[in-house]
Image 1 (cartoon, one colour):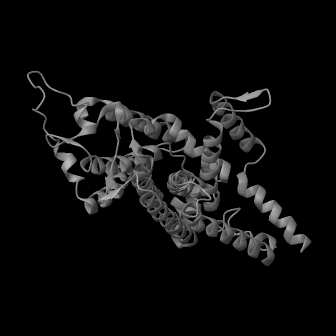
Image 2: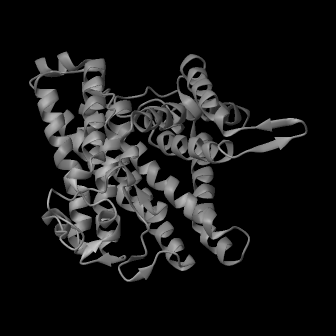
Image 3: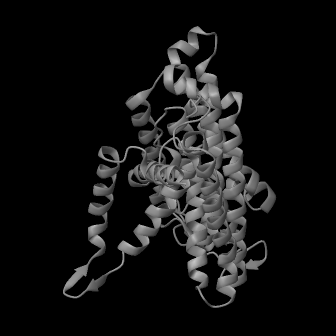
Length: 385
């Protein structure tokens, strides 16, 4: 058995624990999952699965990108952030404002804003003025850049202010959650001209392509899959680098790292910014597939839910973060619809209890999440081989 180094958190490199056969099993299984993901659009073309199923998978993969970022800052750096939902929503709003420009206009005002426009005293219909910040997101290329940079900038401000002040642990979690709730209240006000609680919806086209077209939905799925794979590889490279080893040192002994001459706040801020940018990218990908973005995505439940994804999948394992996001959201899709088996009737109201119970079981019985269970299974198979 080889000794695990700082660069190898439990659950990532099974081959180092269980031998070559375990590594081969993991690669084969990962290859099968990737092949299924690639084949899914083909199955939709063949009529085996519906286009809506592909669309749903694309949305959940976008959420998997958020989970990757959270795993980097929580699983690898030991920072429990509850504001990834804020960064996700910022990216989503950037895309939503752009898409609103492509839809129905009333005197040059996108319909989403027109129906909730906050008229001042003396103003009436026909006197609407498009806010200047809406124009910034109209060009497609600039919108993509801003949809990633703005969440990164906000993350940088929050992270630098908190980390240089040595705010950590539960205090940092409370701070980030409070900021997210404050942002939700800001976005919910009609006076901010961000469409209030209605949010942005009823999108029609993206870059001239009809969003209701099945081919466009499949194309968005393909782009999301490519981004998920790309961000996963990038995150994996980060964890294997010297920077990644410093992140683990921050998690394991920040004080010792500081005495060694490092500045932990700089590394924490950097990875926090990167995770924020990943969440912004996820928001960009999610919004045209969900066809809506509202302030409700910044509610506390979303922040907690993102933590549950990573915990259930396996904290400190990039693959676990993605698996957790996909599994929890698939369960949510299945358990928030009403169905029956014999005399038993399942109701969507039961879902919060299932989610809470699942989180308790993971914390108490399965601290390494799904990947921990998988590691044990693969280890037993490898020993038999």
